Image (cartoon, rainbow, N blue to C red; front, side, top):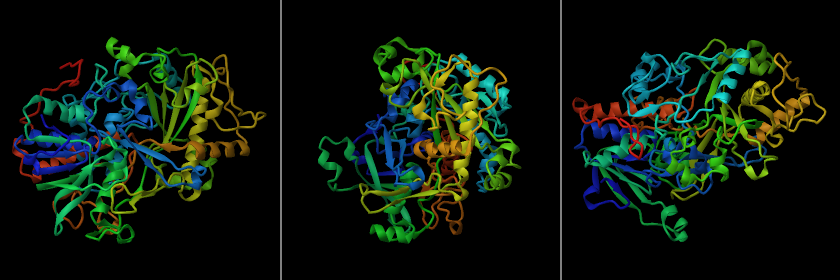
Length: 629
């Protein structure tokens, strides 16, 4: 079996190295192996093996991946920011085989048609990507058949549990407010409505991460003896012969060594060489750091870090993007069978739940959501700067949502501080296309040196991103006040309105407001309270993107449309660092399509296309207990 923690002697040189076993990296590894089982492929992953890990395979346990002690998640410390009330934000990303798809919230959303077209890269338009969007799917939803795949390795379903009362009331209230339920919000064109959300969860309740769908089945089948995965090894830098990539330098991740002294001690690096291709797929945070340690990037950054310049590419690590998230909590009349709180706060025995096949383990507790746009009146009310931005970038682009608003039947704070025994749940608001930009760079040549990470949240001119959150807060609050499950608001998670304000928080309620009740009115002081709360709580959606853009070098691009790093040979990048513009969706789907499109490019360049698809394993819902064909 091709799992390794130590590189065997016969693998000191391979055909293809994939540096990073994340979402896209596992897709690429699986597709290359299918195209030619004789191709010797090595995936180098800094984190542990994910096979059969409960927090990975059981969707309802994903909250465990938010714990700071999780060994399956990486936590990137950002710089202190005055725009964030002096906070130092933390951005998680996937830290195990399968990357983000192994630990994320499993929300199935696609970007919009104009998103992919905005990349302006041959071979990457929406029409050109559509076959690859379908290729990885087996879709179990109500959307039109022609828009989805039906025989791919990744199941898209509702999982094994849905809270119909919460789902229905979200859909109904949004409809009353002008945002109607759509049959399929993921057909690239639909927008400004709601949907009963689908999930990267199989019908048997198993997470559909890229490692368990593309890699683990092959390694366990015995049919792919040349596919190898080496876990718990950090890629330090790419090795070059002149300008040609010929391998990588790596070390053992000290987090997985028994002696804490290794966290700061220098290790003797090791090397592995590639005969044909090196692919960086370490994610939008790690990939630019590997490039910079390899001498590829902005000369000023490299010189400051003491790294000799191999190739001048000022775009490396710049223009970092993320979707900016705010969460607000509400009191409900739901029971512990309706939310996943009991899996997080100890009221449910997890081991017993696994043995019993508990249905709540097979959900992400996110049953309904939508893509939302303001009316022209709403846009004007947010001020002339916002109105100008709206008119320029959104008004005449009807497929572009301003915000995604989602109902999560879970509470993500300290359960011991909740005021009573009611079930508290969350409403998530996040920006689809933030104007704010940041950066991520090395400060030294060692993999353990601190990073310079500016997340950039709320730093845009005229504070348009902040105003988006003010609008979304008011909209989602009006929705909540009208939901049948509404029983109040958790004061600590909401703005600190004056107690005499008409907008003051209502901690307990007997039920929703009467149908037709007027909307709350907010004073200027109330608006300032909302803005301050946004600054205090806005955080990541785990959607880091755009740090090695697919653009011309003169526009600070890092790769071309074939994913070649400008000025170098034999080095590819394939992960969420390459999109030049953002997508109005959770980025997991975009990472899947990047993996599929990249694999197709690499298969053709390696001359393997004639054999592709001959060695695809029969589709299974999961390689762990509970398989279905």
